[in-house]
Amino acid sequence: MDAEAIEQGRLRWQARYDAARTRDADFTTLSGDPVDPVYGPRPGDTYEGFERIGWPGEFPYTRGLHATGYRGRTWTIRQFAGFGNAEQTNERYKMILEAGGGGLSVAFDMPTLMGRDSDEPKSLGEVGHCGVAIDSAADMEVLFRDIPLGDVTTSMTISGPAVPIFCMYLVAAERQGVDPGVLNGTLQTDIFKEYIAQKEWLFQPEPHLRLIGDLMEHCARGIPAYKPLSVSGYHIREAGSTAAQELAYTLADGFGYVELGLSRGLDVNTFAPGLSFFFDAHLDFFEEIAKFRAARRIWARWMRDVYGAESEKAQWLRFHTQTAGVSLTAQQPYNNVVRTAVEALSAVLGGTNSLHTNALDETLALPSEQAAEIALRTQQVLMEETGITNVADPLGGSWYVEQLTDRIEADAEKIFEQIKERGRRAVPDGQHPIGPMTSGILRGIEDGWFTGEIAEAAFQYQRALEKDDKRVVGVNCHTGSVTGDLEILRVSHEVERDQVRILGERKAARDDAAVRAALDAMLAAARTDANMIEPMLDAVRAEATLGEICGVLRDEWGVYTEPPGF
Ligand SMILES: CC(C)(COP(=O)(O)OP(=O)(O)OC[C@H]1O[C@@H](n2cnc3c(N)ncnc32)[C@H](O)[C@@H]1OP(=O)(O)O)[C@@H](O)C(=O)NCCC(=O)NCCSC(=O)CCC(=O)O
Image (cartoon, rainbow, N blue to C red; front, side, top):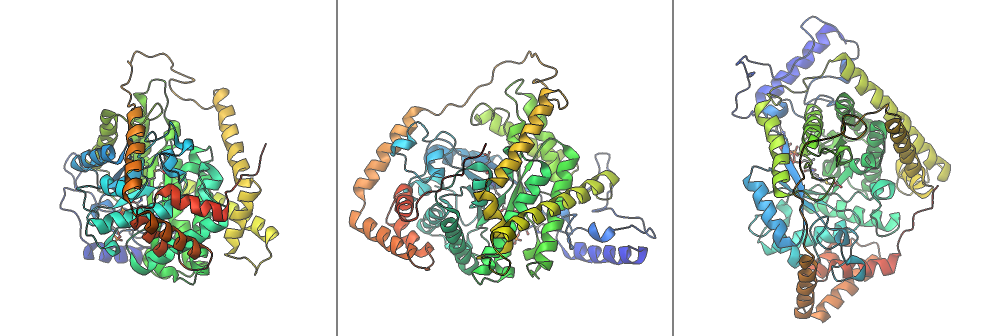
């Protein structure tokens, strides 16, 4: 790009920056020297390929979505939390908000994630263990007691039964007197990554996609700020993928949901801002930063050029990041604080919009209160003490980071082509029921391709670890430790007993005929093309439980069995 075009871009950025609001904060170095909000080529310099880098707040958004970077608004500190029953988790949320957490993020227990009630035999021993147990709208009410849902953004990490859980959230808001139309938050909902990596699905892909389409329609129509999908690479990476695979599979899944919205006749400029993303921040500092920068650039280009998105928000890739759980070690667990800080730094340098930092004890149990606080404080140290929020995309223009960004983008493009090619082999072009990327994803799920590719990458890494080519402190080098034991959070079995008892009492107190009628109406809707959100909301309002709602749908649609792979 010639010097004149670079200068024009800088002036556009300056105009945007001047028109925007910045925080009332000190933007100097620790030594008191002023720093610019962004840096670029020196006036008069040319820069080959600068259109791929550009300025923050401008297409292709490599350097961030906002001209002001974190000077306008810092990232959201969003700590994923949930354990025991709704009451215990409600207490933890209040602690997080009081300690300066910017948003909430609900972790559900395994029965809830699988659409089962706490009193089902398969739930035994799991209630309240890896997250909070939610059986019905009444639990959801308790979960957010004294937390005004109109004033807080809440993320809910659930995908198989995402839609009934979402309905419970809406009903909890109604019961607080909050208009559901003003709700802002994120529902994970991403079912593709369940088949690819996390393995918590309920039905075959098609009925899941139908429910997701209904949800997208409902939110696009009436809850404009709500993000019904958090397209997730985190679980793909944690299952052992490479950074490029994480990026490519996740963005491809995102394209699949765009195709789903388009196939429903929705306007891409209306529904695309409701797609957000969720990535892992692993330990290779520069590769991770490059991954985040490439993600924004690829998404903006595909949204504009392939899917016809015109508005900025429809081209923006917004993402949450969680530090890599898989990088934590049980050996010398205090080192995990350092790993997490480095990973969080890469997320911030990559321009994350929202961040969860893992607690040092998460490889052993759910975080204790003390470990959860250190994790939160880690973000606050980065945010408040390091000057990192002063300058947008400070690594832009680094030869290494720019080349890594280009490389990871090229790798992702190759993978998109592989996915689409699988789709073309399964379904001739012009006949894709949803879209060409979606056909490729479904084919890759059905024939175990994604799982196989991830397993191969995980195998290669494990082999490198065992040959000591890759090193992990406390595991295959610098072993032996003088640090003591950790306090471990244990969820008492009484939680399960109490949850089952309360569920029984609630079932006994409700109007059974109303529950049955609402479930029948929901089933009738499932047998048509009608949007299922309203009938499901009615069932939830009648206090139908999660297990009952999912049970009716399981009976109707059947369950999915994964193809065996060796
Ligand atoms: C979009 C995100 C990523 C973040 O939303 P947030 O509301 O926090 O942030 P945001 O949208 O970036 O910013 C909020 C508002 O401020 C505006 N804003 C931001 N920066 C600005 C700036 N510099 N200048 C002007 N405006 C700015 C934004 O445009 C937006 O307004 P407008 O809206 O008006 O534009 C959302 O989807 C989210 O919160 N996701 C979290 C997902 C999550 O927590 N998942 C947990 C998974 S845990 C899991 O799966 C478990 C894994 C395991 O451990 O097993």
